[in-house]
Image (tube, rainbow, N blue to C red):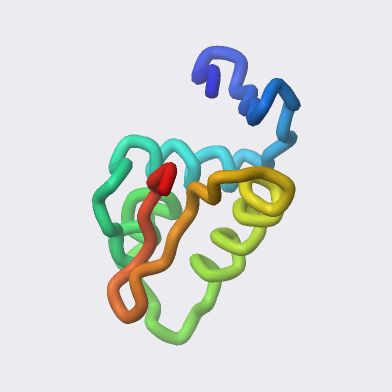
Length: 90
């Protein structure tokens, strides 16, 4: 990831991300190995108070997984059921 150019690469391939996807990935990288809750993500990435009735976090995690993990190994974005998400190489 290049923060200056806002480019993300995996296995040498440029992965186009929307600004919100990029912000979410930056947040996950900054918290690598740490489980972050949907509340933490909404507060930090969307700068909003958490609304438990929305699935926006799940939707954007899914977008990132399709772009970052679908065609690559190892998978980087993981779910800790009932707790949140985390970034790890295994």
